[in-house]
Every structure is written in structure tokens, then in C-alpha cells.
Length: 347
Image 1 (tube, one colour):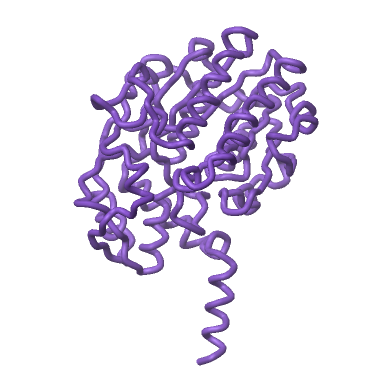
Image 2 (cartoon, rainbow, N blue to C red):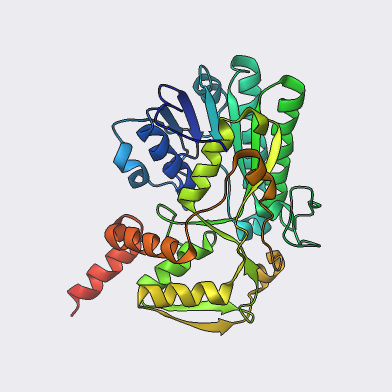
């Protein structure tokens, strides 16, 4: 089993792309607390999840660079002398990619190529960790889905993630830039964006419950997913990054306990003590990208590093609710705040 301790990343130079986002900021906080010298790269594209408050606990410990991964000059400068590059930046909305495929192509594919070319030129010794998505598999012929399962993604977003993964694998195999390729399942927890429902559906349901609103459960609610609390996801990322056996490998980061959407929603409503739910029909857009049941086979990552999630669904929901109850003013939209103030003024 790969163990982490206070010295694992102490003094290490680390770059996190998309480091103001959900998973990236949680990763930045963990690494900074472990003594790493953390640089965060984030373009802060509206609605993509970047939030300066996400890194507030370590704001004095890390360096933030506001730039885009497509900026060749900036990336070539930032990758130098880094021990680790955690590549988490990307266009992450499934529905948006159906309407306009170019952000996925430009950010997820071109941006990844920019990073890997910069590393080839200036820092081939860095270890790269890429976080893709379980959507790269597409509809699964058998479950749980292992890393050897066919990859037949249904959307441009998932195709762009799979392409980015393959680009990084080429640089690993041909140019010797060591990399770990992760396919993350549905991750939830603190620091996710809460402005809209286009991605991060679990956390969006948390918001609806906190707002005492109705959660729509599409179809009969029987679709299965595996959900992973963000702290467990960060643990997997870090353990894989320091284990040489993982370099050049692909791993699922998921849970071996599949849960239906209906069960998940009922737990959120019950634990929060607010909100309610009802069945609803799929919209045309959501139906087009819905892949049916999916849950990960995590045997490989267990065998390589001894990792498996340790946070129960109930505990994860409780911790997520607690975080947003305390910090909701940092995640709910400015427009809604203005509307509430205006409404109060008319009473």
C-alpha cells in the first residue's frame, strides 16, 4: 500500500491546472498543507467552476497565475522546474459540448497538447497526473467497468477527454514524460460550483435541498452511479502520483458501491432536513448524453496502491451540507443575491 506522510510532498514544486476549480482547489489545499510549493494556473472562465474563495485557506501559501492552458508562452514558463504537474483544467459541461464543440477541442485537446509540448521542451522529468472522466467509456457493455472496457463515448466532451488522455500517453511512451491517467467517476463535496446544473449534478441536488426546492429525478430514478467524496478522490490522485508502478497506467477512481439516483436524492433530502423530490422526464439534451447505468471496477487501483474510498455516502453528504451552509454566500450567484435584496426592499 502506498502511504502518504508529512514529508511526501514537502518542498516539492507543483503546478495544478484548473487549480481554482472544484477538485483542483481541494488538491491545492492538501498539497500546501503538506509543505509543497504550489502554483495554481486558472483562466477563471465564467461558469467553469473557478472560485477564488476555494483556495482561501491557503491563500498565503500558494502562487496563483491567471492564464489559460492554451497560452503557450505562459505554460512554457510555468512548467519549468516543476516536480509534479496535476492537469485538471478543462471544459467540463456535457450539454454545452453538444451545442458548441469548439471549447472542448480547444481547451481539452489543444490545451493538453500545449502542456505536454512545454514539458517535452523544458521539463521531461516532471510527473504528470491527468484527471479524465468515466464518460470516456460511453455506454458500458458489462459492469462494473474496468480499464480494459471499450471506450465509445457519446459526446464531444467525453471524446475530448479521451483524446487528451491518449495525447499524454503518447508523451509518456515516446518522450519519457512519466504520467498517470485517471478516469474519475461522479465526484462530490465542498468547493464545487453551485451556480448552475450543467455539471456537478450531485452538488446541484445539495443546493436544491439547501434552498428547500424540489429535486427532479429523471425517469424512474433507477439509473446507477458510483459516487466518490472529493477527499477520497484527492487521496487517490496523490497516492498514484508518487508510485512509480503507476506511471504510464490508466486507473478508475470510483466506488464499488453503486447507488441509484433515487436513493441518492432521498438521502440528501433526509439528511438535509429540507427540500423534496419528484419524478420528471428527461429533457432532449440530457437524454442525448445519458449513458445508462455506470459504476467503476476499482480492482486495479486497489492492487497498485491499496486505495479505495473510505467516506460513506451519508458522511459525505453531511460534510458537503455543512460546508455550503457555512459558506453559501461564496457560491450562490451574485444575481440571486441582488434579487433577494430587491425583493426585501419592496416589502
